[in-house]
Each structure stands twice: as C-alpha cells, then as structure tokens.
Image (cartoon, rainbow, N blue to C red):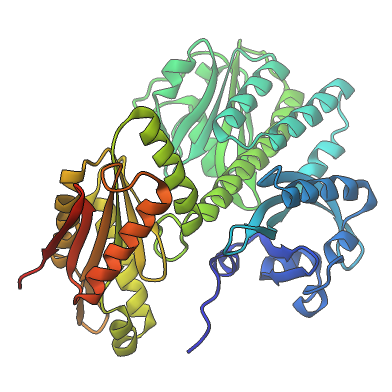
Length: 474
C-alpha cells in the first residue's frame, strides 16, 4: 500500500506557485515543481540543506527574511508576507513575493514553516522602468508597497481605488473583478459620488468600455464618452459624457478584471493612461496577493481531502466556542461521528472509494446542520460536529437526524455499485454533563467508541446527567 502524502504536499503539487516546507535545523524537506522551475535547482540539490534558502537570498533581503523566520519560530507571528530578492541558479536576480505560514507537529509545536513563493520580477520592473514624472513614480512605488503589505482583501481593494482616484485626480474610480463564470464583471470597490449606485450593478464581458477592455485585454482612453461606441450599454444608451480611462488587471496571460476611472470630458491624456496601466499591474499583484493569502489561510485550517475543518482548527476553535458559551451562558453539544466499515470499503473497493465515502459523509453532515454549527475532521475516519446553543435534550435528536441522513444517502461508484453510509455517533453536552473542553471531547469520544464496539450504526449521547442510546432497527 502506497504511503499517503501529507495534505501540504498534495496541495503544493496542485499549485503553479513555488511551494516548500522548511523544518528548522534540518532545511527543506519538501519542494514542488514550481520551486524547482523558479530557482533552477533540482530536488536533490536543495533538500535537507539547512542554509540553502539563505544562500539563495541576496544580502539586501537576507536581514528581513531572517527576522520574519525568527518571528515565526518564536511564535510572535503565525504568517508573514514579504518581497525579497533571490538569485536563480543561472545568476539572474528574481524579485519574489514570499508568504510564510508556521508548520506544527502533532503536539501543536512549531517545527518549521510552509512557504509559497511567486516570481513577481516582471511586475516590479514595471515600476522601476517608469521614466515619467519623478513624483508620480515615487507615488506609484509607495502605493505598491502599501498594497503588498495589505493582506485583507476588502481593505486592499478600497486602497487601490482611493490611490488611483487621488493620483490621477479622477472624479470616480471603480475596480471590477471577473467572476468564476468568466462572463460577469462585478464591482468590488468604488470611490466617488455615485459609488453606492455603481456597486449595485454588474456588467458582462463585452458590455460597455469596461467589458470591452476585459474582452480584448487592451487599455483604453476616451475623451468624450458620448462620441465613442464602446461606451454603449446593452440597452443602447451611452454612458454619461465624461473622460474615461480603463486598464485590465492582468497577471501572465490571465485577465482578472479592470480598473475604470472617470473625469470631466478631456480630463485625461496618454500619460495618465500609462500611469493607470502601471497602477493596474500593481493592483493585479495586490489582488493575487490577497487571494493567495486567503487560500493559504484556508489550507491551514481545512482538511485537504474532505473540505471539513482540520484537527488543528477543531482543537483551537472548540476552546473558543466553550469560552463564548461560558461568557454568554448557553449550552453546547459535541458529536463525534465514526464511519462504520471504512476498512471493508477500502479492502473491497479500493482507497479511492474509501475517500469518496469520507467526502460523502462530510457533505451529508454539512448540509444537515445549522449555519452556526460546523464540522471538522477529528481523525482518520472520525468527524466532529460542534453545535453551539444545542440543549442537552436536543443532542440525541440531532444525532439521530444526522444518522438518518446518512442512511438515506449512498455513494455511487463508477462500476455502478453503491456503498451505503453507516456511522456510529457519540456525544456529550456542555455544561449539563461536563464543564470543560477536555472533558467534553473525552466523553464524546468514549461514547462514540462505546457505540462502535456495541456493533455500530447507533448513537450514545451523554447528557441530562445520563447516557442516552439510539439503535437503528432495520
């Protein structure tokens, strides 16, 4: 049987970015293809070499990098973002946007860090190559630094439109991002007199000036909107007569949106368009920056196979839930759900079928609970369901509801066979049966084990000062 790869390795192999894990005092223990491609070194040349990363980083960036690593190692920060200069194996200099997240062991001790790196040399060179007005170049670089340092997407997007409007003395500015359907452009940030009105409207690719720019990937300047057919809306009505600038947000070959500025007729010139193009490049990088950071944060708390929260999130968040329940004086229920017969499914149908079963169980749990409840992967075939506000008298009923939802669902395999879903559930109620988080987890876990050992497909809940049991009768 092949060894199951850790989540961070499987996820990194799906990423186009350079991804790595570094264990302190050991060096790199894992790198993906993106890392090899970005640096030019092979895996055998980089793994288990404690100082390899530091040898790649140029002296001007090394101090900042070492300070970031020290913050992660000491636990003062859990994530860090920085832009550093690195040397490719062939000698050329790379500007690299680097995101670092602490890596922990099974005892939640920091052992190293996971890194995601992206070569942003092309985008940063845009600012360096700008030869027009010194003041504007300095402002652009300042905006770039501010945006790269901002990891919260809403604020980052607001900052983009505010800076663009101020820099080019525009009356209004709106940032549009392309939706997942690649057909719809949604306004995500706007500044100006009609910002609230603009934020309520979406447009289609090819519609109006913004849609035209996204469709063709070509920046445009229009002196009088009424005189240009590209400003016509779907209904045939032109936009208000104003001077318009629009530049696509683009990284590589992918266009992700557009930046639209408006002013009085004749307000902008070609140099303003050049500046907007440069600013749009920085905005593209900032958007990608926040999206990547959001994805890294998601990866840090989500189980890669099932999409449920992972064990680390469960351990930390359950303590927060108990603290909140104590403070606001409301009950909380915990159910531990164990998938029956998973080994039999793996042995008879293969591990892919077993993975399908685990993912199916999570889907059933997630669609059967309230918005305030949440599901985490507790162990290999065990899942926890946290139920804030669940009274002791409701806990058994909720467990029965979840178990019945499992019985009503089956997993369909490619060979037309189906796998039934059966689970054993153990539960405990706070503060009725236990009064702290450790006892809550232990009692729910022991109840689940008792249900499993009694034959499975049953529920044992510890609440109302006693055990309550529900057994499925076929």
